[in-house]
Figure (cartoon, rainbow, N blue to C red):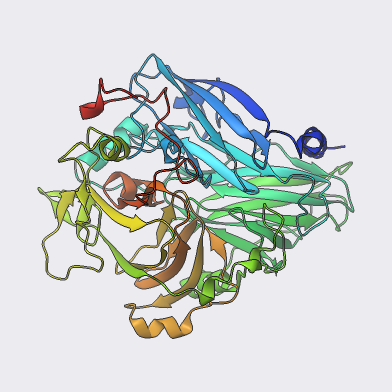
Length: 537
């Protein structure tokens, strides 16, 4: 039995007796250090967790409580964020600059959060100071409880692939370039699990295996394909899609998905190819799908990628559909929530841009470039600290003609609002947007400027739910989101240099009815900094 299949059996066996008991706890102690790594063949300084690059993989079960003690042995403040984990009622644990004070050097912080009502493929990574460019990222896989079926038979095993672009320059050098108003250079390579050629993914002929793929790179979109095999899509960022079959799949910055592959070919070694999309230079990383007992490689060249035009990618994105009859993480079908019949309470149209401020390139949303304050927004809100948050200062639509500026915008929204958000891209590069705390329905992709007339093209029946959506050049993407999770939530570019340069904001979802059923209190171990330093918990 492959190791991953054995792990899945063990996790389900452990979860079975706990199905009706208190949700179990899993404890981790992670020490963050610098260390030598050689992902592209030359030694460079990486960020390691417990000496590992990439960091340790977390395998857990729906509703498990995760207690992660992070010890920061770097010479800079550090935070981890948990990409795609919703942190129900608990934005205190989100691990971004707007919710958490950084962990100082030679100090620690213990995250305490729950994989509440989630199943699927997620990641974690450093959220500050471009640390992500040096590592510190890893996989977080949430398996289903035995009582909750997923819409496919148990796979013979599953494989986790962390893919993405990589730079030979260190994160400090890249950060210095951005701080000086420059742009990131083209990446130097692509990685699969921290190397260009990872250990083989081994399976038995006739078996069906689950491949979990997450794009943990800084900015490049990638395409994944497997020589001689087809990919049956079965998960998109914690939700179950209609199980269409593809020759290859695009995965944009910050996105995750999972597909099934049946080993139905002659027993040989087949190439697992990851390559960049829409980039001046075509970078490739190649792994191997090894049939047990195979002694030769499959003949022929590496499988070619899809056409380089955006139309192919747009059409694939539109083919992703929510599986209405599949179970969610709770015992009810995904389609029991009829999102298309709910009137929206407001519309936000958010346009990205790259203006110059004080002579240096920044990135902005509706003309406002986010600047991280010395006091996290969540703490400023909790303690009513004035002059930190710019409440509702972000225009709800692009402010034509208004000069760009720096700021700390927070949009106030009411708990249980149902909101339409349109991401407008007037630039010539693909964008990728992520919302912490939520999934949303991607109801439309289009060209040019979005107008209200475009609502007639929305998919209001089975749009794919996910937490990160791409926006194609000179186009728009529209989402609907049900604001059922109180807290302070980061809405940001998943293209990490753009996030670093200010393409982000925060949504404060709130109700005046204070209750633990809506939101947890500030943790007793919360680090207090800035103007909150010294205040009582």
